[in-house]
Image 1 (cartoon, one colour):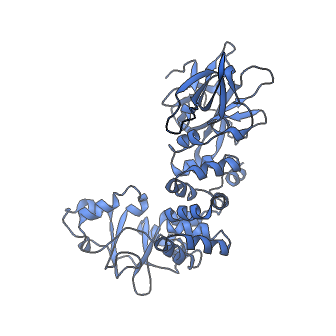
Image 2 (spheres, rainbow, N blue to C red):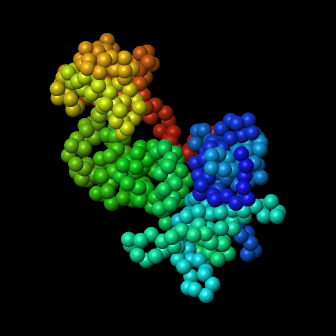
Length: 421
């Protein structure tokens, strides 16, 4: 791979970073720009990379031997693992500069307003990477027409370096939207509070719900309470009921009641039920929406159900079979069928003849330690939860168990980094 003399920094976002041996170090999350006291353009001094366990480190630009559309490659395997902290005279390109509203000088013409889409850096004679170009989308003033995109010399752009209240959100969201929800949540934690709330509010309800499920509780609460209540209720409806119940449990009871009342009754009902169970039990951590089928369902129909891309892998790993009704609480619980068994059977077979009923289901009062022991014993990724009359109420998945077994602040990057330092 090679490295050109001009690189556009927003295009590096989320690229993998490799050491000289070809081992992946992490992914690019931002670029660091150092401001200078003279009129010289800002200098790009390095990249911010996210490693395993969500630790973000600084990669000096001098240690990078290659940057292209596929990857960033380092010239050394020796890294400073100290958590990255932005210094007073530094800015982050994605966090601080992208989406800024600027004006561009056009000689004798009036200045043209626009929005920053990307920042270009070039290598100068002193082997320094400096900002030389800014990709800008022109503001047209017409709602139905998008302005054209052009490149401007850095010294003709006004407003790029200054207060952050001129920064929009559209392009930052477009970059973040390429990430998995967990990675996007991690990126949001590094934004200033006001900026994070602004970006979160601009996400659509489904995307915001997915991201909230990956944030620590205090960030979930802060984002939720900064939404208007009707929007907050809409987002809660799109969260998994168990995650929505956990989030609501962090709010005052009066606020819980208001939001539950604003939710659609059929969406609020399972959340209310989950909140009634004692914390740390199967009832409190289960999902009330596993894949449930009646015994006369064919294998072909069962496979079609678990192909739904909105299902998480652990939920789609097996189907639970029960007498009608198939919505929780169901009729009599009969057993489960793993997806591997479904793949081995003729499409016209019915799932009622394939159920595994040899593993006792969980009760709502079963504790996490017992759930963990039984999952490990039978190599399961999910277990059914039934009531005293053997009706299926939901299922506990392995990610539910992990989420509630790890320390309460395990999603909090600051707490994790302080403990690892």
